[in-house]
Length: 566
Image (cartoon, rainbow, N blue to C red; front, side, top):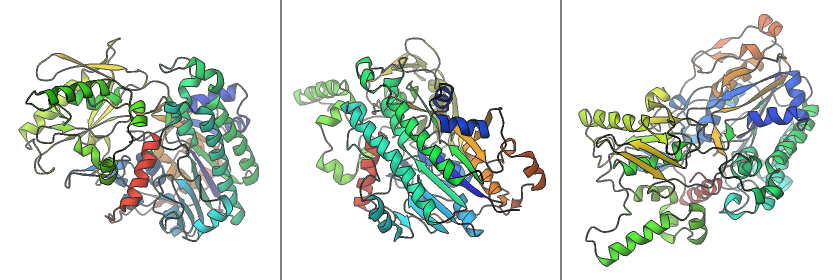
C-alpha cells in the first residue's frame, strides 16, 4: 500500500447545522469546497457528550468503559474522593501511539486529555487543561515547549478571560477578540508544525468553537430562551465571525497540504440553544430526599438557624454568576480544592444516591455500603429498591409548563458504557431530550406519589454560565486522497474516526477496536484494491495512579471553572 498522509482537524463543539446553514448562505467557502470534494456527515458523540470521553473515544476507537475516561471530574467510590483525570488514566492506546509504533511520524497538537504529554514518534503538545507551557508535561519532547515559547510567547495557551465568562460579565467584544486570536494561534501552531517536517499524521484541536457556542449562542439565536436583543445588536454575529475565521484559515491550510492528504474535519459534539433537563438532576435528587445537602439550618430552630435559613433561601435565588462575582472562592475552599469541596456540601450519613457534576446527562451514584466508605445502602434488596425508585422518578420527569416528558433513556452505567474499565462510570446514566428547554422540571416522588417541582431556585440546582448547550451530534467532513465524493449524509460515531485514520495511513485496524471502518467515505477503487487489514487486539495499559500536585490541581480547577464545567 502506498504511504498516505492524514490530517485530522478537531473543532471542539462545532455545530453541524450551523455549518450547513452558513454554507448554503455562501459564508463558509472553505467548508463548502470540502463538502463538494468529499463527504459530509454527523458524528455521534459519547453517551455524555463531554470533552474527556468524546475526544478520548475519537483518539482510541473505543468507548469510555474501555478507555477509562468519562468526565472532567470523576468520583472514586473506594476512597470517597474526586479526581481530575488526565492522560495517565487512559487505559487504551491512541491512534498516534499505534501509528508511531508502526514507524509513522505524528504531530499531535492540543488534543484534549493529553496532559501530561507522553512519548510519541514526533511531537505532542498537550491540550487545554495543561497547567502551564512551563510545565514539564506540556510537550513531547520536553524541549519543544521552549521552542513554542520563543515562537508564540508564554501566554494564551489556556483560557483567556479570567474567572468570569463573557455571558456573566457582558464583555462580549473582548471575548470575541480573544476567540479570534485563539483561532489564529491554533492554525499558526499547525502551520508551524507543518514547516518542520512532512508528518504522516497530524491531529490538532481548536477549542474556540465550543467557547463561542457557550457564550454567544443566545445572541445569535432569536429563539433562544436567553436571547438578549440589546446585546445582539452589537454582538449577535460573534459565532458567525468565529466560524468564518476558522473557514478562512482552513482554506489556507487546505491549499498548503494539497490533495495528496486525507483531511478529516471533526467535532466531538454539536451545540444548541435549549438547556436540557440534565441541569436539574441534582435538585430532583435533593427534593426527593435521595441526596441530602448540609446547608439546612440547625435543628434547634433558634434565631441563628432561622437567620441562616433566610440567608440561604435568598442566596439560592441569586444567579450563580452573580454570586460568584461578589463572593470569590474562600481561602479554605482554595486550600481544599474546588472539586473536593463538592463532597463537603453533602450530608453523607443521610444520602442514598447522589450526583456531583452537572452537564449533558444525569450521572447518578448509589451510596453503597462496602463500596463507598460510610455507604448507607446495603447491596441487594436496598440497592435494587433504590434503583427502581430512581428509574420511576426519572421516567416520570416532565418540563413543568408543557408537561412534555424529558427523559429518553435511563441506563445502568455498565450498559451505557460497556467495558472492563468502568470505574469512573456512575451507576445510572440518564439521557434527556435535547429539544426541550427546561427552566423547571416536575416528577412523581417514587415513595409518596406526590408531584415535586424543581427550578433554578431549588437546592442543588446547577446554574453554570452557559447559554449554548452540548448536543449529541457533531460534525464530520472528509475530503482528499482516498476519500469518496458523495451527496449522501454519513452517520458515524466518534469511535469510527480511529479505524478510518488507521486505514488511510495504510495500517491494520485492531480486531477489538469498537469503532467501525466508514467504508462509504472511502473511494471504491481504493477499498477494492487495498482491503482493510485486521491487526492484533488492543492491549490495555496499567493504570498510572500518579496524582496532580496541589498547584497543578488548582490551576486545572481554575480552567474548569472558567470554562463553566465546575
